[in-house]
Length: 571
Image (cartoon, rainbow, N blue to C red; front, side, top):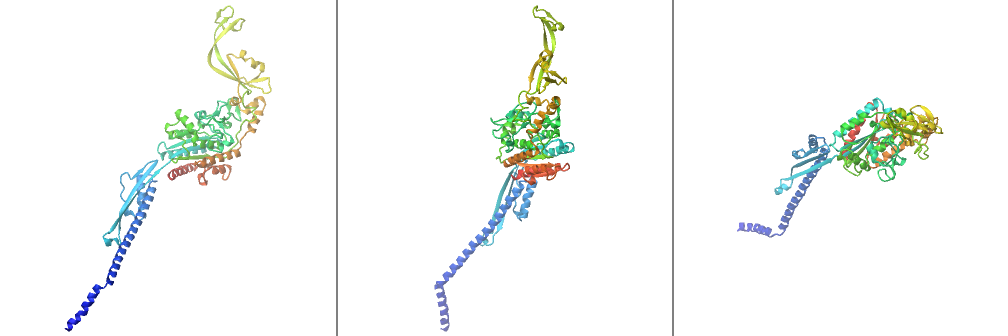
């Protein structure tokens, strides 16, 4: 009885516990706790997964971009692997597949993939023990095409060892550029300069030029023409506007038909003509090897032509060069537009000294310009006697002695080419100097040449532009005693070195404004002198200017070539 009574309270207590509603709250709280733990675990593991994926993708992006700048496939793959190793993600990088890495001269493409798993911390409570992570990336680098103007000083101070070293350095530069370019993607123009720049005849004929003589192709630009990268100002000579002036061809010193090389206003020799738009190594090397040093210095002319050869307006010139077979037809788009992202334009300007003075006859008061010079050309032709005939009797004799007799006429036939002799008129009248005979004759004798010069054809009074191509102002002064032309030539419209410096700075600034990269080299120029100042100002920055001597001129050109290649990779 007592035992039964003892069990009753425990049964009642259990029954009460089962009926107690407070226990259901505790179970729900436990369920909510479990759910929160699972959600938190999912967020934590998901966050860890995303961190690994983002780190992996960032490493992929950096690795393939760096690899795409490699020179070959092995280097590219090694670069990618190095990036993953340093990021402690080497285990995730997948093996290289066919086609992942494509390295060419003008472009490169590198692809890579990575994948793996990330162990979970809390998601394994619901049976998810790991999460898969992966990524892929591709980088493509296109090296832009190159248009280069190689502007080289060949003035008289470059003689001897200096020009020999320049040739070696310039040829190595050409080879480096072409060897690291896809064929057809690098075109180089070689522009030698001294007193002036000599364009090839095709270029000269394509431009709108006020032609006044047939000796040379050098052009004279106005001061305003150096304020922009196109060849001429205002109404361009490539349009229907005002034509550019042809430079007078003459020399300060020299005899008749013997103008002194070192003082010529324009060099007509083929070695001095610039070579436009070549992509052939042998042709470029031959041009550089042909260079000879002579004359004074006009760096502003070299830069003006170097900039013009990169200006899109010169496509009219390149089109004509293609028509004449002097330029490859594949270069029809050269020079490219400045806004063309696939093309890098570069000028390399080398000079060994300061600009010097150039001389011109006064055009504003043209006493020694235009028609009616003091020089006369008399043409004649050797003749062969055929027969003589009597004007009344119509009898024919094969006796040349009859020619001087009354009523007899003689018939001659031309025998050989036309030839010329020249006479210089005394500026104050009355006399003519026979250049071939080295003697003076009267104006009456000169007027009777038709009857006294065997084989006489014609007499032509030359223009001053044609006359100066035969004689120098100093020779004219020595023969006539009149030094007025000399004084006009050296003292009227000369352009001194300081004016040339300003023009050179202007055209350098204009071409740089259009995005052209300008490198300059001061070859044994005085440190801090005029030449170095203008060359340094001409360069795109202080780091684009190089000082060089005969022992390291090649190093300067090699460094520029390397910089050009780096620029191509970072455009």
